[in-house]
Image 1 (cartoon, rainbow, N blue to C red):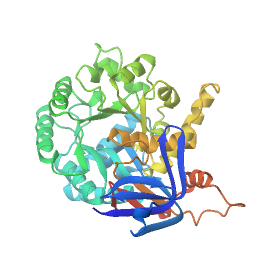
Image 2 (tube, rainbow, N blue to C red):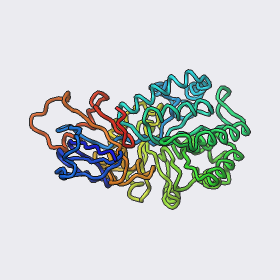
Image 3 (tube, helix red, strand yellow):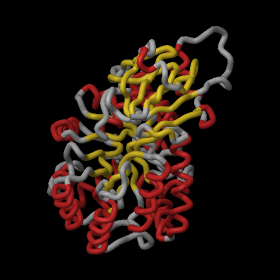
Image 4 (cartoon, rainbow, N blue to C red):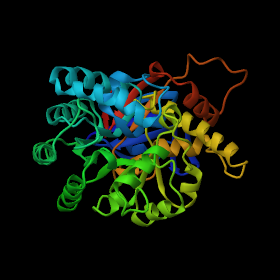
Length: 421
C-alpha cells in the first residue's frame, strides 16, 4: 500500500453552492484514493512523507464535459458567424484534415498537454469521424493522464463535400472502433457520438440506439443550441414535436446521455430531460460566440436537471475550464438581466461545483474530495497575483484565483491518483 499526503489550503465543493475549506489541512491517499481529509494529521500518518503546499490552494481539478478535439486548430476562428454557417464555413473543412494521422497525432498531443497544464483531468470529447484519428486521440489522452470518454463522430448526411461518411461505413467503423478500444485503456473509454440530429440519417440513429443498449454505452450529442437548428430538426423529423424526441425515439435519451447546450429547452423538453435523467453540458462561451443565446441554468438546476460545464472548443474560445467557470457566472448574470432580475445568477461556489463535482459525478465520483474516490486535484500558487491591501481569507483567495489564474499558477495536477504535472 502506497501512502501519499498533501498539505495545503483545501477547497472543494461537496454540494451545489457549498464550499468545504480546510486551512492548511491534509489529504491522505492510499494507492491514489482519498482515505480522508484532516485538519490535524492523525498520528498513524506522521511517519510518511508530506508533499507540503502550505499556503497554496489544493482544489478539485476540472471536468470539460463537451469539447470537439479536432477543432483545437481553429480556436478563435469564425467568431462572427452563427452556428450553422460557422459549421459549413470553418468546422467541417477543418475536421477533414484529421484523415492525416500525423496531423492528428501532433494536434492531439498539444491539446492533451494544454488540458493537463490547465488542470482539466476529466472530459467528454468528440473526435472526428475518422477511425484512426479517434484511436490516436484516445491513446494520447491515456498516456498524458486524462480520464474520461472519447467518441468517434457519426455523420452520414448534411456535412458538405469534404467531411462525410456513408451510412454503412459509419456503422462498420463504429463497430471496429468499439472492438478495438472498449477494453484497451484504463482511464479512457468510448462514448457513442451522433454529431447532432441533422447530421445522422434515421437508419444511423436507429443503429446507434441499438448499439447503446446492447453494449451499455454512454451517449453525447447536442440539443436545442440554436433556433435555426431547432427549426431544421423539426423539418427533418415532422413526427417529433420537439428536438429531444429525435433522440428519444431511437433510445439515445437516457441517464447515460449528456447533451450540450440546451439553450432553448422549454418546460416540456426540460421535463423530458429530468424524467429520463439526461445530463446537460452548459457551454457559456460558445453560446455567446455563435449567437445562440443564454441557457437557463438556474431554472434547470432548480428543476433537478443535472448540469455540468463544457468548453465546447472551438465554438468556445477558452480551453481552460477555470475561465469557463467564470464565463458561466457572467452568462448567468446576463440571464438575470434578461429575466428582469427574477432569476438568481450563479455564485462562485455554485459555478465551481458545476465545473468540478457535477461533471465528476457523470464518471461515478462522489461529492467533492469524497473518501474512496481517486484524487483529481490541482495545486495553485497565487504568488504573482496583485498584492492585496490585507491578508485574504482562504475563501477570498479561492475566489480571486478562479478569476486570475493562469497556467503558470498551476504547479501540480493529479488525475486518478496520479501526479501528471
